[in-house]
Every structure is written in C-alpha cells, then in structure tokens.
Amino acid sequence: MRLIRYLLGRIILWNEKRTAPIPLSRATNLQEALDKITSEWVLYEFNACPYCVKVRQEIRRLNMNIMRVDAKRDAELKKTLIEIGGRYQVPCLKYPTQEGVVWLYESDAIITFLKKQAR
Image 1: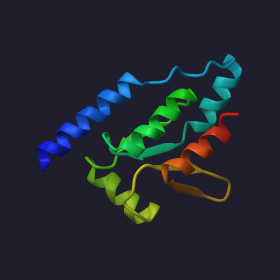
Image 2: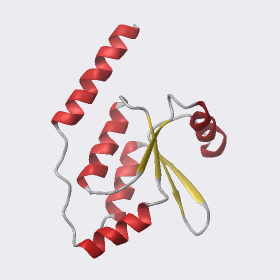
Image 3: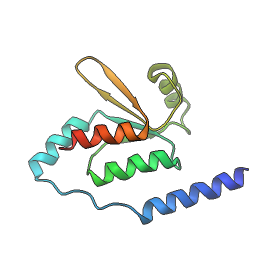
Image 4: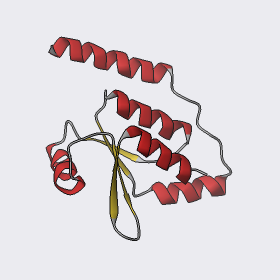
C-alpha cells in the first residue's frame, strides 16, 4: 500500500509540474499591494494531496505569494492545525482579518476566496 501511495504521489507531483499555469501579470504597484495583503497568509497542505495541488495551481495562476507549510511532515504544524484551526484537514488557508484569524477549509472555498482577493 505504501508503494502505491508513493507512486500515486509522484504521478500527482509530476502532473502538477507538467500543467503549471502561467502567472497573471499585474502592474508593479498592484502586485506589491497584493503581496502586502497576502504576506501573513499561510496555506497548510500535504505535498501530494490532489486538492492541495488544485489550490497551489490557482495560487500560481493568480500570481499570489502565500507561504506554504507541509502539515503532514511537521508535528507542530499538525498540532496547530488541529488545536487552533479546529481539524486536521488540508488544504487550509489561514489569514488574518480585523475580527481575528480565519481558517478556511475546502479547496473550492479557498479558490473562490483567492479569486475575490486577486481582483
């Protein structure tokens, strides 16, 4: 079973590289403004998770600079995701608001949110 997971993971990562989108081009001032907004955002992910790949592809396409962390390989990140985020599920986008920190789960919800922010 481990071998199958390993091979599927490699196929997923190879396909991610093969289908990497071309990043959007923005005026420098608009890109800097977006970078400032996203500077505190963190995407909790697993490297070969297909849903995480889907979100990463959209982040690339939207040309957003969001810190990515592997919650599978780091026990502290896993603990944070469970205790503060509320569940051990990826992808999860953590971002600050005026009301506090939001932990956004589900790839489609994250992508919808990212598209709204990139406007």
